[in-house]
Image (tube, rainbow, N blue to C red; front, side, top):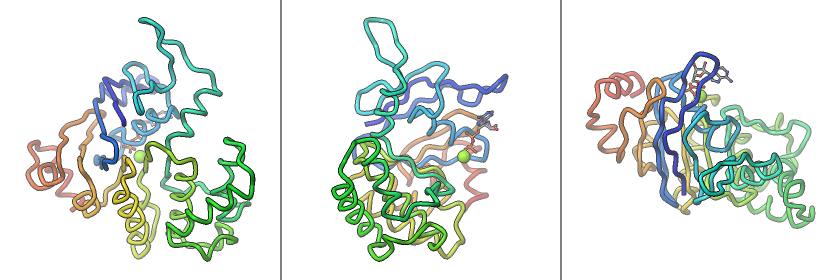
Length: 250
Ligand code: ADP
Ligand code: MG
């Protein structure tokens, strides 16, 4: 479902991604670990074209992100086509990023109405189903400020699912939450994993990685240092840098 090949990215003179290779099978959960500044967010942002790669390729479900290939040449997609590709990729941000002036229900229904021209009644019906899935059926008319951080993030997850994405990216979805609210968000994510959603999750929640991940990827200074099943990367890491990082977060 996801194929990242040789992705390089720099900002100014700083090279942030030094040739990243990563693949994720349909229905799999990939957890990306790594120190602050190692390029985790940049990698996710390159996958849904919030950042443009300098070189290398990203494919989602076989489709090249941001470009159209004809023969040997790549042509940049128009903004409209990029938006269409991005609609197939859900993104959950650290700080929820809900629209403050819209209710929970309206936050979820906004993209289907605006991007897919669904009727409000159809979009609201599906939004209610999604709210139910994240355990918030009773919060449809609540505004973000009336919800706890954990509830806001669950609404944000429902919103990320509203366009039936092929792939959902999570960028430290629990890092902004008080510790007692982390569990409810991880529970929703475990539920998604069980129903076969293809997920790439940047998180420091090692417990989640151990239980839910098919693959754990350790990124350091813009390079994949190590990747494999959780039991290998978390319990028998091969590299000193992985060991040093894990000793800090465990
Ligand atoms: P992580 O998510 O692993 O903490 P990031 O991908 O956010 O790391 O950042 C990797 C590096 O790229 C950092 O040094 C950061 O300062 C830099 N960086 C990220 N985004 C930008 C940007 N838009 N402009 C300039 N530098 C950036
Ligand atoms: Mg980050």
